[in-house]
Length: 398
Image (cartoon, rainbow, N blue to C red; front, side):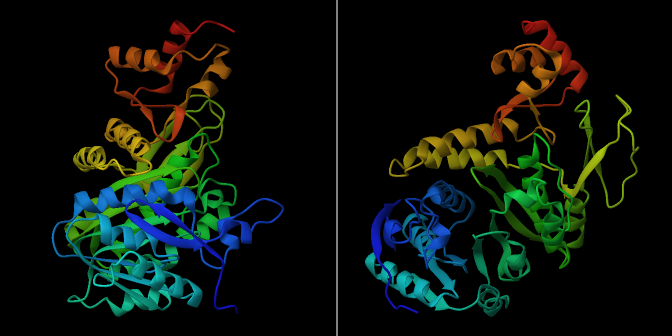
């Protein structure tokens, strides 16, 4: 194995880091970050910007953070530079070349007093800090693929009141393209539907909640979303059987009719529901177990939005603010959403402006909002029959 790799320097947040030179690993003019010997994905700047805001607004004073899959170290170095009150960041990677690059980046950013680097497998590194006196205030697991191999170790390394951050990039299994892969990794059944990205988020949250519950720990979701090619979730850890049971009561299933687009949710371990759609009589399909509760803490989103406005250096500040605004809007809404273009094709009418549809539903007394999952998506507590009637009234026929 070569001991040196060609690199280039990038600026991200307040950090300046060496990363693999894309052109050195491009194939026929195209570069995939996974082809480089050390992983760095520039598309995840947005994820890292949100992570800085989330930890800044969730934790205070004497903060210790672990990132066991460090890659180039950019995420952990940014935590050390940008999150007030950080005292220690533990970075680890099993890749020897990655560790050497992380060490150079730590020195480049002059954070040697805060950041420690280990060449160690992620689960083993987390297990080294699983004793109560050694646990972290935040653990950030950002893998290439599913986070499930690391969730239990991450929870054991997290103090009560700490924040667990998880990324899942295996969207094809989570969105129903490879259902058995989803079942193996998350012990959940996905659905290939128009709102599969939301189901993906809820499957990941549900998996993390169930994993914590095995230890009578309650992982309370703080923020969960899906953009680009990944799912990202944040949760805070609470202790006690009662708190754990309260969260488990929000685990359940989404039942969906692909014929008429009717859907419903059922909570519990083994809920009873009819096999046929009550609206059209066609066979129902099911997704789950998954999280049916809120995906965003509105007060946290407000604090993050205020923090984002202060940090003009963030490369994705405007996009982060837009996401947080949408998450606040849809934070109280029920699971699933409707894609208006799909409904209008069925009704043979032209899609109306989303704002007009939302206002009409609100005028009838129903909650209704846009959603971050899809620019043409509608979240509402109104039943599909009402949505279709409103569409017929306000949309011109094709």
